[in-house]
Length: 374
Figure 1: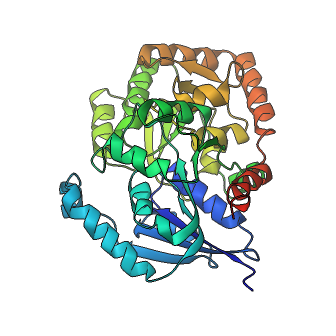
Figure 2 (figure 1 turned 90 degrees about the vertical axis):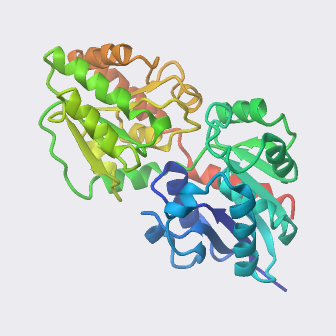
């Protein structure tokens, strides 16, 4: 009699994004005495790849990052979709599982659709606002997308805002659930003390991939406004991405390169967050924002543009929500920079919010999704 359940998790890559980081946190928390975990990843690259636990079986369909040809032909569904299907079926052989999970929308959901007959329970995760940011439109139509998700036993949205966006984009399916991402506050606090980072002036920090939807160009324009006001500060950008050269050029053109530090992807970003004064998020679309929650765990005040995830997480009290105009964002930042009581108030608010994060509860809710269906 088999004691352990076999779980297959599908991922696109282990790039330096929030969903990939959450996946690592989940893998660390699975009870290996109860589960055999296999992760099949489309692209075998990314800074989080080295953090996959040793007791997790790892299958890489491509043992590399997407190359020039892959990126140039990304909209050719007739080419890459059959190739991916062939690679996945070849890698799995005749294996079957108790549970298959596609942990992101887009590529992983598409891969999942090829093997839904291989598992007793099929579950898929949605991490982003797919109505306002349909980043994988090159992969499938909305009709095809609905067909995939309607076949799932459960579709997990990481916030109420993400579920609302899903309903607008795809449909109000009856298999939707909301489960927040795991936030391990104790782990974040421990990692924040691993080394020290200099702090010699008011420091604004942002942590996100340097991608169009994250809109770090707003941060650079905000920095230009604050510098013209004669305020002393620095901006630290944690993250890598295709817009790095463009953002550096913008900083040069606005004469603020001396105020903006591009620190790239950091395996342990928490000491940098701890040494900052305020966390700033300027995205056009956010489903949950793991980085925002991590800043809250370190008692940092948070300013964010009004997007689905931050609006839900911050509510009316934990942080400050703004519009997209750099002048408005700069005005809010100036209030924090010149008002110590305001800073201290929002530090306390973050501390109280962080106390509500409960990773054990999240794991119980996740496991319940399949336990009650097996």
